[in-house]
Image (tube, rainbow, N blue to C red; front, side, top):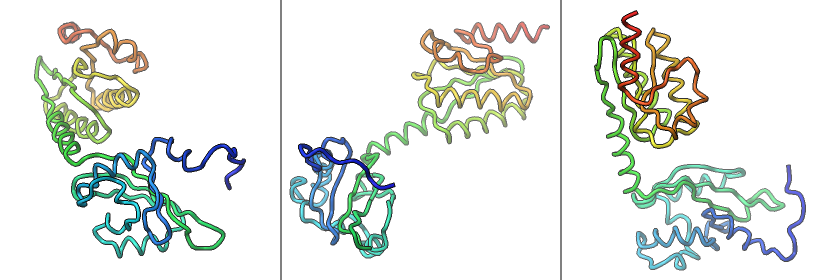
Length: 253
């Protein structure tokens, strides 16, 4: 569907691009950088010293080829480009970013220029630090605390891949040791957002398939406000002590 409507005469298009808040660079058909908005200039000001430049001003008139390890390969992609092109690049092994290139098509079949957006920009040092922290947090101890009962303290951030690996580890532990109860301690979780809620629900459902019952402990008042959407069959307690006492009562019956 083509663009519709008309931009008011008092709104200058480049000013509109400047206030979007995204990193936007415009290059001409020869891949020469002609304009960048304030956010792009801020980011490229950090990148400039990596190329021996003082600031982003020196990048105006610079070829986009300078940012690619294989300029010829990049040109081949650009020459064939008719729609949005997305890829992930590393700038001088210091900055990682998702780059989105969109050709500005005129009346003809060739692009008149390109809009380049840098998304999800991360400094290499920050990414390495985050990865190291995730690896550290991934080593979650599985504690044997009672007969056929283990405790699983959850700490830090959780994404889908970390949850999958955690579930696989706990499934193996439960299967080999015939575990019946798993205390999942949430006291180390700072935020109980929709993603974490779904992942814990997936964990409790998966473990139930092999006969292991999950009990959630370490429920703070703040977590209690958002945990109500979990399966009502999952028992919750404010402390590990209360959860373990409940398990002992069940095993006596």
